[in-house]
Image 1 (cartoon, one colour):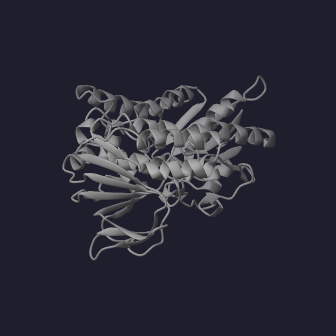
Image 2 (cartoon, one colour):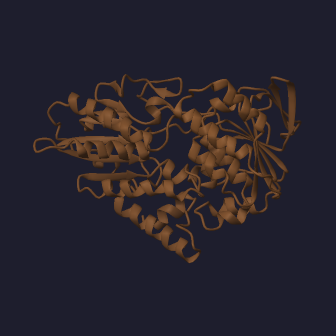
Image 3 (tube, one colour):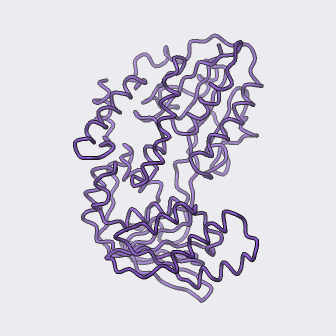
Length: 420
């Protein structure tokens, strides 16, 4: 039996495990050890998906089926580079798969980006999703206007979370500390700004269509922006572009509403400078009609992610250096760490399947090693049973309040729930 290590317990890691399971045969079997830095698995499904989109999180049921395989072991609360190295993994396993995602937010690199009140979605999103690394992040919503810079689903999630009536978050698994802040929020206007026109936006049409269902928020797109984009793409736009523009056309032509909170879309607005003295006071944009200033007290950038480095793994331009998922020797990479932050959660499934076929074709005779157990014998490891205790405790806490779960946002709390 070949022993495989997967570093990272997010969607890419679980889909890699699923692909390996599907590639088993009478004369080929795999024992999989999944290693995760946090005390909890599931990656972005737990700490990245917007809490008001619970259906997306049902993919976790697939992860749990994979974890039920007797040849699968979870080693959470184990950090590569601290408790164990990539070099040690390569010695102990027939193959090592990097599935660590991309957790660092890209920078605009414009003046004023470091002002108080300017932050990355890479920090804001895990903060409201109870990620232990961000539980003490300072988030001030004491201004009436916020700007979100970006034209993808993350930008839309961030803007929507800021523009929702906060009581709408009560039945979700939003972190308790974040709900408290949202309920004290003074933000009433949220601007989403995109550098290019509507036809180039990276939103997905289902996300756009859901905006029309918001019951307490005005969604404002300028009809002339959408009409101009429709003219530019002509009679035969790509399918995704047409779906997006159709959804935007519906928004732009919807009857006006008069809610207290609003989301505004700004297209062809290139941020040039974030202005302010000791904190954010506005954003200066270049537009086709000259410079425009949007006054605001909060700026959240959602312009992409890059992977954090791991010793022993080559990185370039925010990704692991690889050729079709092969990195070097018995080292492979899947997911965002491989291809950059693109696609949706399901994209990782086909991506992982292709890389696992390469991995299997490369395998020689099994090493018959025992894995990493001996290297972390004195470390508190959250195994599958301990994770189940955390999971069940959070779900039970949520049932009392009509929520899917109440997440624990502190490592100490999580370890207590794990009974370790």
